[in-house]
Length: 443
Image 1 (tube, rainbow, N blue to C red):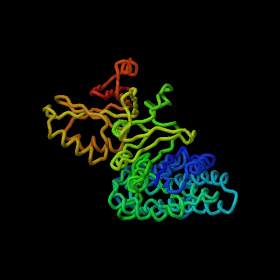
Image 2: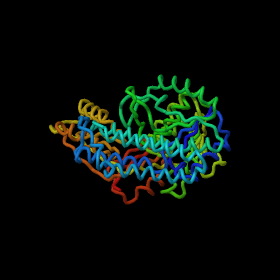
Image 3: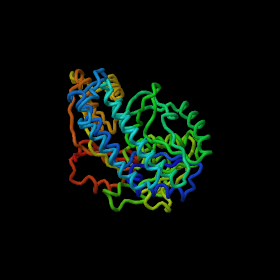
Image 4: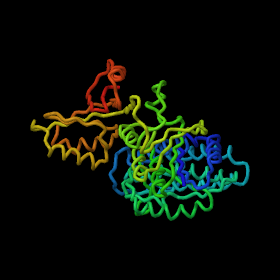
């Protein structure tokens, strides 16, 4: 049993879908679970639908779960901006389907996709919640359902027999919308029971990024969460190997788009991969590694552009004695600095309150530094969450805020690479440990 994951770029158009099926043919598609993301920029386009809808729903005022009357589904519904945006998403996928199908499979695929688009439109027309994250998950999750429907129907039409599995039947989470926490015990049993039967009929295609609440609603696992989905399937099925197919040849020591001289890493350990993803390396979703590490399942990162070339392998016994400096940039950072209003030292009770508030708002801390009378935290720019935190802690703390910052992390650093990347930069915070250096600086 193996698990493959194909991201949005690998299924962005008709030629890309054909390439995916070619890769499956080359690599013996039997005994495989194939996890697929939304096509191209579909997730961004669906986020736009949600934002247009939410602006109309709230009159541009943010809500926190209050119930309101549903939008009218009568005359004029089709003129709504969010509805037009849904139509545009359907037309984009229709173009792909027209290029793929030349027989009766076209009608089936179009009808299947139309059902998904119409389902989202019906949900938005009848919705009575102002909970943005709930609305987001119900709408944005259809991107994965559309892409898997198209790939599954096309694969079947060319003789690659497969079953399309609704991931909500087997991957269960709590109801923390946009950041669903997986119920591993229930999920593992469901995946093992369901997939073991389905692979007897051919390979299985399913959606990444999506889970199911106890109430039966869609959740999502965090942006780019399809890698995590694949690792959950690999873990549950005790897979021999997990492979992530990307538009790069494997894992690099830096983003090749920013560093043309970036070096290819043929192998790294689970620990190194966890450190890289923790600090923001985008090649693998941060939650991906732990499930496969627990069962010692190797993870290979390969190129769908050059599919015959071996990629980078993440495993327990990789040789990492000669790793070059690993460079990670996270842009769009915000620095929040907290000082007690009574000018007292920052003590444990202060830190406890700050950490609890960040946890309550589910805002991950990327860097922190303590001084005598202040405590500073760097986070991703999440506007609503940051504003909530400032409001909640503003009674007890004086808070200063710096926006538009970049967080540079260098693992296995040397002085030369530090000097090169920080020369003439306005540095706000600097930290060094034995293996890792971090610098927060103005963009």
